[in-house]
Length: 115
Image (cartoon, rainbow, N blue to C red; front, side, top):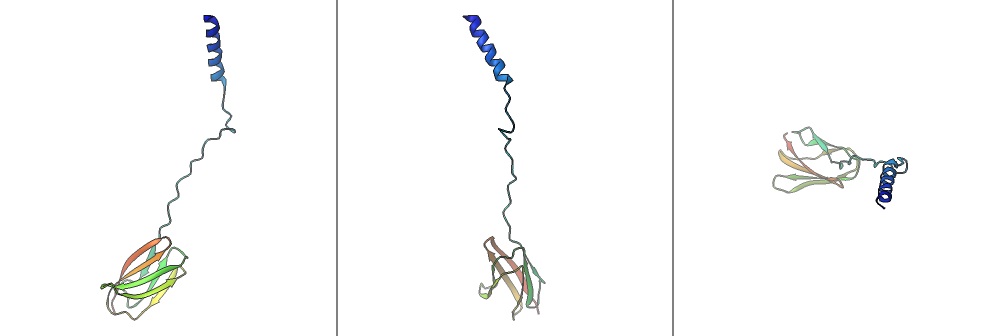
């Protein structure tokens, strides 16, 4: 009886270690690098300006541009649909904040008007 159990155990161990997994049936998982989210970037130049400046962004989607003075009053509000918009406004000397918002987020920049 002991020899029979020993033989069955031995054959089970041999059978277990002789089995190989077929790599085509069990492919290794493919590791994908996580994609980083899109970050809205913009460039406003020249700064300081004389009232005319350019807004250049890295997206062609619709974006809302708002211009505020230091007191928080909105001086300008427009929508741009391209990567570059030239804004010409009769602004007085001072510091202004430009808020650019799109579906990717909101950026706020400071611009100085010096005529």
